[in-house]
Amino acid sequence: MALQNIGAGNSDDAFYRYKMPKMITKIEGRGNGIKTNVVNMVDIAKALARPASYTTKYFGCELGAQSKFDEKTGTSHVNGAHDTAKLAGLLENFIKKYVQCYGCGNPETEVVITKTQMITLKCAACGFVSDVDMRDKLTSFILKNPPEQKKGSKDKKAMRRAEKERLKEGEAADEEQKKLRKESVKKKGSSASSKDAASKGASTKKMSSISDEDRSPAGSQSDENEAQQQQQRPMMIMMMMIFNGRRTLLWRQLAKEFRNS
Ligand SMILES: [Zn+2]
Image (tube, rainbow, N blue to C red; front, side):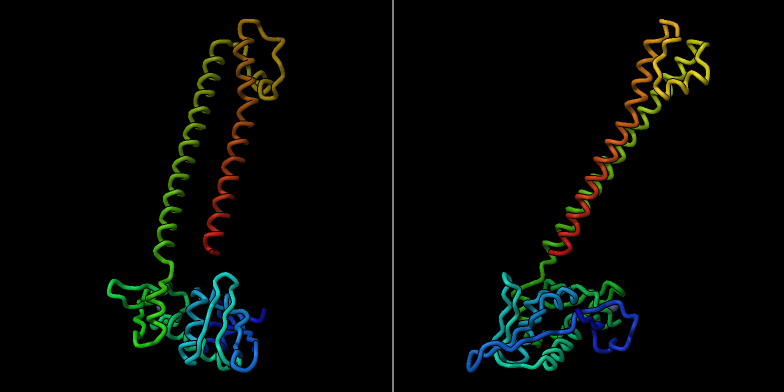
């Protein structure tokens, strides 16, 4: 896929990081039914973070032709035969008016519709809010088909909330583990003091889970319990880690799908 920098003014910048696919068009039909298919409109629109319906409609408005973007099939059609250079030029105008920040030229902006039904572009790089010229024909289409920012921000909020909850859960689990550890240390301490025979060597034996046959019967039961606990603990921690990892993975995937949608 051939890429080019977003914004004609940046075309010579080899290190420019905002790129979009080069436009591909195809003339379809003949006679009165002839139309131009912008084959990769969806990919271009994605790179510009604008709905493909906006760019398609913009072509139609500027050319005074019927246009249609089919959401289901992702096909973009403009009535009449138009060459790629002409449409690419129009796309440049669209980018200048509806994508690039009027302040710094960065294409990372968000279309925001104000309470007074004005269209603005909020720049993610410098924070500048650009006022779009509302005399442009496309503005009425955008007002009728606003970008899905409300739903998006709600989803974002929900995701943030969920993340907070997850963090809390994680902290709670950490606390639990700390408590367990503390308790086991206490037990160890008490058992060690109760029987003077328990030397450092014995505790390492416990770690390796060798049954304590050489111990006195009085101490053997508690030792066995301890050994059992010691055996189980790493397994429990491992299971917790696996569980947490799975959950994080799932959330990442969800977030990715959300971004892509
Ligand atoms: Zn800016």
